[in-house]
Length: 242
Image (cartoon, rainbow, N blue to C red; front, side, top):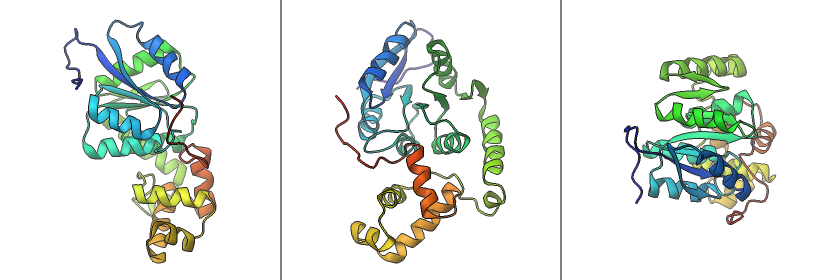
């Protein structure tokens, strides 16, 4: 098992890259390993692989897309945070809007970057998060600063709806993600209950929670939200591209 890096300057920052595009992973690795203090220790092609590799290898930093097969990057981040892993998560994604950023950071990410980021800037982000900082839009925050940014962002996006509930922008549970995936496929609440072998009322309760967490008004908006931001794929593959 690869051990996590310490704070000693002589030890390299160990990186895991999780993205379903092989060429993109290779490109990120080539650029990062130009740095004497960085070592890429593994690749994952989907969310489940990424989760397993973090558990096994304990990287210092995970560079992860959100739009992943099997489990999306926000699901993976939420699970890693729940398990108490020390790996810092850098979201590197093409989906760039305030709501997406808030959900990613609330799930446990340390940084959120566009895939078009320059290699030298990505290196700087990695070095910042290893030191316990947070990075958004090239701004660097401490813990108090990122919490203040998130609070302002949630109030700005959700307005009075946010003030009425503490659930807005909270990470979806695995069951809620299953139900949201069913919604994007056009299933009714009754059909979802049958597919997941749960009661109709349980589905309704979960749907209410999903709408609150996404700060949307109905299931159609929830489906559009998830599809547009890459949380759900209509045709998912468990195999990746390797």
